[in-house]
Structures are given as C-alpha cells and as structure tokens.
Length: 220
Image 1 (spheres, rainbow, N blue to C red):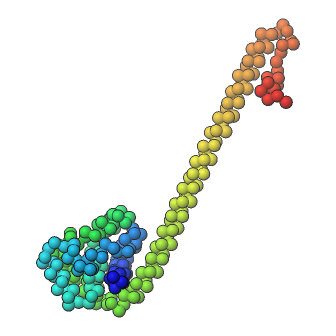
Image 2: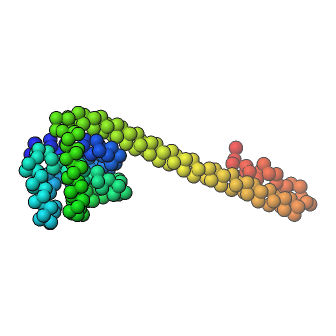
Image 3: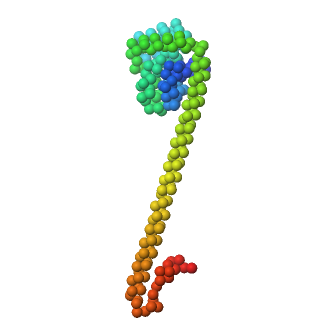
C-alpha cells in the first residue's frame, strides 16, 4: 500500500508539469490527494471501464511499460480534459465526482491520443526525474496554501469590518431617535406652557416657565 501511495504522489507533479493551471485548480479544490485515481492505478483502469477492447489495449501498454505508466496516463487524461475540469466548481465534491468517472467518458480514439501523449510525457520526464518534479510541486503547494490562508484571513477581516460598520450604523438611528423624541417632548411641553399661561393671564402666580416644566422631569 505504501508503494501505491508513493506512486500516486507523482500524479499531481506530472499534471503540474503538463498543465500547471489545472493542477493548481485541483489543489485549491481539495483533490490534490488524487484519491479519485486510486482505482485507476491499482486495477489498471479496468474497475472504471466497460469497454473490453480499451481495457485490453491498456493492459498491453502497461505490461510492457514501466510500472508508473498508469500514472503518466492518468496525468494525460486530466490534461486532455483540463478545460472541463476548470469549468467545474472549485470544491472537492464536485471535482472528485467528475474526475472519478472521467475515464468512462473517453472513446477509443481519444484513448489512443491519450496513450500517445503519455508515452511522450514518459520520454521527456522519465521516472528518475519525478523526484525533482515532486519537489517543485511541494513548493507550489506551500504557495497555494499560503495564498489560500491570506484569502481566508482577508475574508474574515472584511466580514468583521462589515459587522462593526453595521453595528455603528445601527447605533446612529438610535441616537437620532432619542434626540428627536426629546425635541418633540420639549416642543409639546413649551406649547402646553404657552397655552396654560395664556389661559391664566389674570393670575400671574400660576405662570409656569419652561425651566419649571423641565424640573418636573429632572428635579435638582
């Protein structure tokens, strides 16, 4: 199982080699662990294919090739359908589901093209160069993780700012409403005093000033 895991670890570096944009998209979408390709590798694609002629064609290739050839084929499958991968939502459930069943959508002629590309990729990046590709990919993954964390932090910061701005705005109407309330109260009180004083013109002892009126609410 460890050998299988180590072999699968070369898939993303190879995808990054032939299509760095797609590799980064997959990593950001949570499919960089390449679990989708596990049955491809351990069953030589027979687990996901129904066409016997295609299965036999792949078996012929893998029997006479390096044991990592299924990984090279997997890299070229993803590369061939990179546009479709990039059109999916960048999240694990969506990408994993699409990638898992991707081989079932490939016709016989397309398989021949993918095999041709895989052989070319093998010639240009043989197994003894994969460690270097893997090292480059790990560095890129660190950058992707760092940039993703910065994006999450920025989102959180903006969310908090929006919250505090909302809180600040929500307090302003409260203050304004209090000022308006007391303004109306004083105006009504002043009007009431005026009417009372006009009615009591004959008896000056019953006059009420605005100060006396307010003292009834705020005694000193």
